[in-house]
Amino acid sequence: MGVRDGFILALFVVLAFGLAACNGAGSNPPPVQRLEDIRLSAWQNSGVTKVCLPPVPIVEMAVIDLNTITFQLADNSRWRNDLPQVCPGLMMSEAFDIRAKAETLCRTDMVQVKSPDGPGALCGLGLFERLEPRLEQM
Image 1: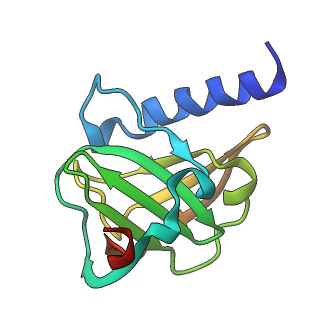
Image 2: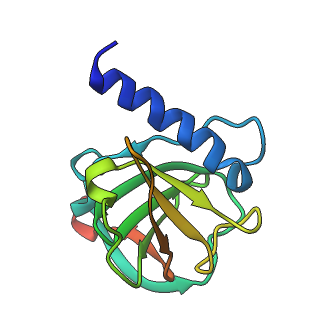
């Protein structure tokens, strides 16, 4: 098993345990995708913000930069979260554990960066903003 394969396996293990509170026990963890994989340019901010995501399972997450994560839900909605502060190591590892207090992910919850050396930075989430397809993409 190569270093990359080991990293991918570790990522899935981390997400399996970290997202159990969000998705319900026994569900498959959503993969964390890279920016180029989600084609963020096809989406724009809607101006609609929420303190918590709707209670729908997360099917995909993407680390955009040191303080931005997007979440795609099973209802096909996509939400952007701008963390209030830079989260050190978020781009380097692209693996994180979600520390949710309830079944719904809220701005009062945290993400913890995972690194080969163990737990990394613990960072608070911000408001969630709904993304919508750009008109030229429709």
